[in-house]
Image (cartoon, helix red, strand yellow):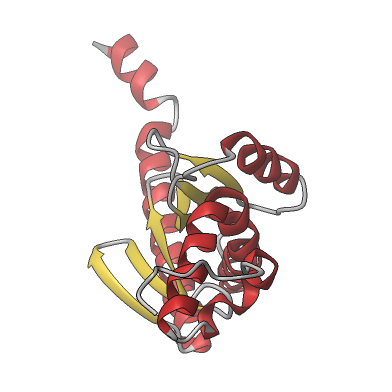
Length: 193
């Protein structure tokens, strides 16, 4: 049927051309990601073709795992930031929404459990070595710089209990330094003096 083949292939075989163009763009995107990761000397794994799982070292957050998935039309970016808040969820969500306006190419999102992620999508035609480097830098900056704030907003009671437990037992509090303002003024005695 000539009308049928023209509708699917267009006058110049546009469906086939589109598939060919997408395959070329996908290959270029994969090459750009490989080059960016090699240049940055980033630790990463490749669980499947077009899927890169990158470990980004942080300062506040020890590391951020970022998934880069090259699809047929876009590069998807996904990075876990912090688990669902135990408390004060409204303030956490408000903070995330307010800070989304400051991000470029990525945004904070929550999954069905309330866990916080950074997500983004970039058309394959825009994926270059420079763009991958910028995206990974944005993910690292957003995940790392928000970490202490999100923990304090969503887990203040747990952090206070941790302070009390460590102080009572003489344990190190070095990794609680960012939460000094949640440190109890006095540690309650457990009655075992």
